[in-house]
Length: 92
Image (cartoon, rainbow, N blue to C red):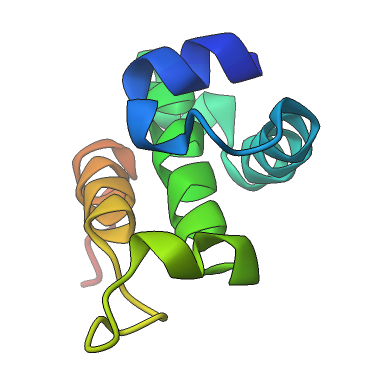
């Protein structure tokens, strides 16, 4: 996973410093367990990284004044992937 692939998927971050993207991608990748997310690990990490960038001070220019900083479509995408891929537990 690299900044170029991330920008291809999320072109709205094309003006963000590639080193910042790489650092946030690395942080997000550490939070996503490949054993749980499997083939969707990159998708999950990228969505989580996009959310982290969006809520950061650098992402303020992407948000409107009324947008909530703690929520985003990127977070919703990450949570959807997490629900789809995370194991379900049955408690008896």
